[in-house]
Image (cartoon, rainbow, N blue to C red; front, top):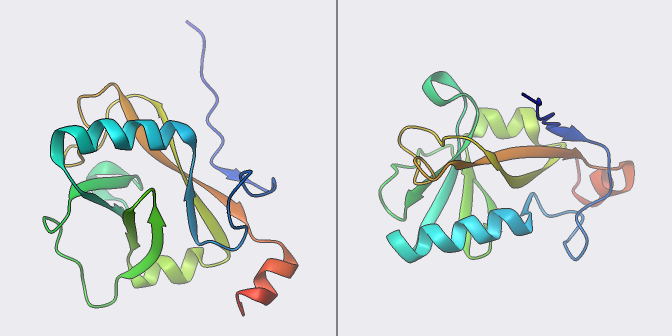
Length: 137
């Protein structure tokens, strides 16, 4: 059985066609899975899990079904879906661009990608020195 190598941190350039200083972006594979999920569940949002039961996966929920906290930070939108992260986690990751991607496997037990044999995965790209200046980091 071959092993799939999953690299989650990269110093590569931003994805082609995306804003290099966007806090969050997504791959074409994430867009495709998101479209399938929307066809079944309607509008959705993401919350970057901080750990516990589902590790640190991006969790996908129907809009309005995940209670956002007062310190949660909206990173932006990917293909019309808002992406949120807790305030303390944002402080730890603010120097990176989060990239939603898809890999084989089962999604988090409460995430809408569960049971689709593909799951969302967050990769991160370190912002360059120039991008950090633009973002005032």
